[in-house]
Amino acid sequence: MVLHKPENKHVLKAFDLSGKVAAVTGGARGIGLEVSRGLAEAGANVAIIYSSSKHAEATAAEIAQANNVKCQAYQSEVKDSAAIEATLQQIAKDFGKLDIVVGNAGIASHHPAEDYTNEQWSEIMKVNLDGAFYTAQAAAGIFKAQGHGNLIFTASVSAILVNVPQKQAAYNASKAGLVQLARCLSVEWVDFCRVNCVSPGFIATDMLSVHPEEWRKQWFEMIPARRLCDPYELKGAYVFLASDASSYMTGGNLVIDGAYTLP
Image 1 (tube, one colour):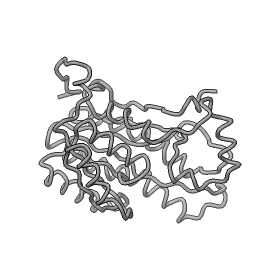
Image 2 (tube, one colour):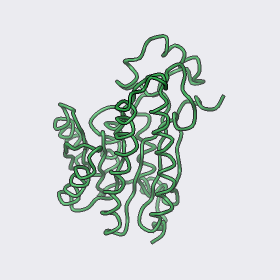
Image 3 (tube, rainbow, N blue to C red):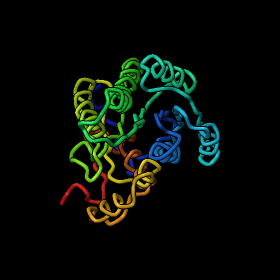
């Protein structure tokens, strides 16, 4: 059914994910970890997909115990289409279904555009864009068979502006491509799947902590909110998009950036 119309219910019930099954790529740390927690806190059973985390199993156990839900960790690689497809199929088998997939895995690097090597450019695209598509494609096979599904991408404000002072043309291009990909898929798959993006601004994760202090100082001066966002401040947006509270929303891009993109 096109944009399945849920029953009219109390607004808090609309956000309830009890009985839903969600999978989150890059779900063991940073934004993905808080998304995994948020979905579990809303009642969903959660599969955390990770590539290299040493603590994913323990993290999954902690989330399961804290929220009285099922939570398991799965090691996979979004760059490998066969691997991520097999992983999502296994999750659907283990949990009995798959309602929500969050394509959150991503990497960043910083080089002047003229200095990118082929390998540096390709690696960004393989994870951020190709990997997101492979994840979406694998999810779509499951969603189409079920007749329903919900796909959420983690994009970035880098999709809609040029960051300074860091030079990251590949990252920006990959995220801009991801937002457009989501728009395309939202139309193509409207009969069985909603597709939306979250575009965070500067988030206090390990990805930012490695940057020079002068960069961070400049960012603070450019952000009207005058602070970074804590990852947990994003989880409500993902719960909204994963739930019936956003039942008529598809092809959207939620920008959450402390007004960074506005001035």
